[in-house]
Image 1 (cartoon, rainbow, N blue to C red):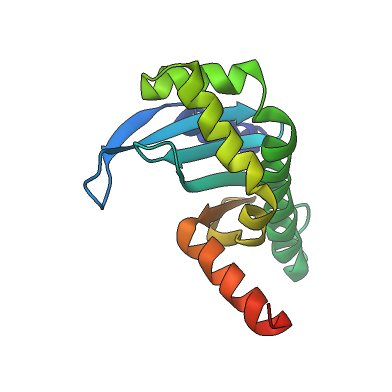
Image 2 (cartoon, one colour):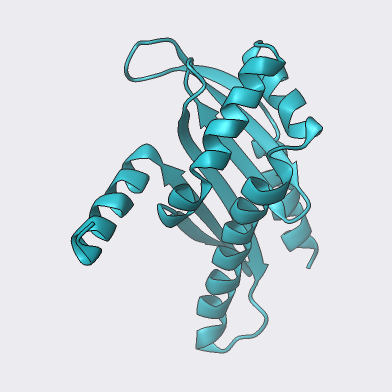
Length: 168
C-alpha cells in the first residue's frame, strides 16, 4: 500500500509543473499546464493562440490479489479513474478561479486569455471526451498506472468515425 502512495505522489508531482515548449507548427509556443485534482493529475497543453492541443490524465489502481484477472481489473479501474478525472476537470474544475490562475501563471498571459482558453475547451468538451484513448499503461509492482490522452488528432478521428457511422 505504501508503494501505491509513493507512485501516486510521484505522478502528482510530475504533473504539477508547468513548462513551455516549442510547438511543431512554429506559430509560437505550446504551454503545458499541470493540475493536481482530488482524483488524479492532469496535464493540459495549449498553443500560443489559446487553442487546445492535448490533455493527459493519469490514474492508478492497486492489484488486489494474485488472481490472473486482478491485473486486468486494476488496469480497468485505473483507466476509469483517469477518464473520471478528465470529465470532472472539464465539467467542474476548468471554470474555477484556481484553473484560471494556473493558466495565467503558466502562460504569462492575462485573465482574458485564460478565460478564452477555458471557453474554447468547455464549448468542445463533449467532442473532446469522445476523442479520449489510453495512451500508456504499465505496472509498477502491484500498481496499475494508466494515462488517458485527448489530442487534436484523436478528436478529429473520432468526429470522422462518427460521421461515417451515422452519415452526418
